[in-house]
View 1: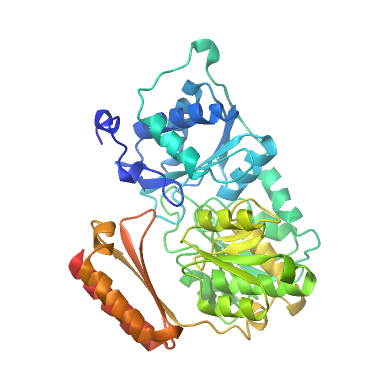
View 2: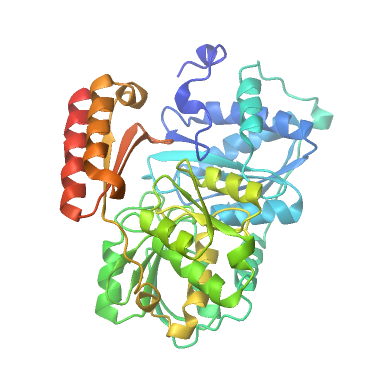
Length: 454
């Protein structure tokens, strides 16, 4: 993109979405753009009384290039920089809070290696507010101006960042003993590769680690929480009790039980709630659970039957977190695997979520299928479609009419959700129905229509 033109208007793909900014390296996330964005963020954060930023990254080949670019931008604004190296996103949030500094993660999460992105945290370990994000976007539109040489920021490196995070994760479940547990871990060749196996091994588990050899381009490639097939096969062939997969930046989790069943965030929230009910009598009356528009209706029904509050938000863990803070609740998440345990972490943390689930099923000899025996989800069909202009498709009258017709045909026990992705040029379709066949047929009907429209 022509940088002169960007001074007049920041393009949509370079604005903050539901999970930071991300896109292709050769266009959206170029070093020139990120240098200036870091300068703008540094100016805004210093106005908020924050003098330093911690920078972590995942294992993408582009991480070193963008780390240098953003380091230069922050320093040019007068902000100090501390480099952390490859670390999960929640590790950066934790270290930001414990060091009273801002945190920045260079990652495109579950996207392929060609993309990269950024996520920003404030000094309390929470993702930046929409207000601050807008201020950064506005500042970016101004001509860059470097501070005087005497006021330039300084740079250093936190050499024990990995060790601090490992101890933090273990302390989240202080009485957890994984002795005798055979566990398969899929680290997606991402940022958990050099911390997760150590955490579970040090707690006593027998760990079989998959996808722990990142080479810069194999992150999320046929592995991780978005590609659990190899994990499933390994769990079944090895006789392990459970398999756990993370995504590229370590904020999403997926679990495979010993029978090879793939469990999503709704299954994990149900398991965690059961444990909360049995171990904390006050949870029923004083707290609740936050899900999203994608949360299976079966979880909502269960919570209401138990007298536990439930709230849906727009899709995105940022919205889940905002609602948890607003209601002073501690547990929320998404089917995609973002699980937020606010009593332990300020953001979605896949490792802490995994430890919490293991603690919840420790009394069942770590057989999560026993905890889920009574949880019967409504069948859902999910379809992702690439389109040129998601918003235009969403507003198309024919699309809106057919969506309404499908919803009416499903009745009270069905739902239709069509939404644009917050990070990619995609339309996401979700249909929930009484039967798998009905969900499939309805979703395919909508997908065919949208494909011909977009």
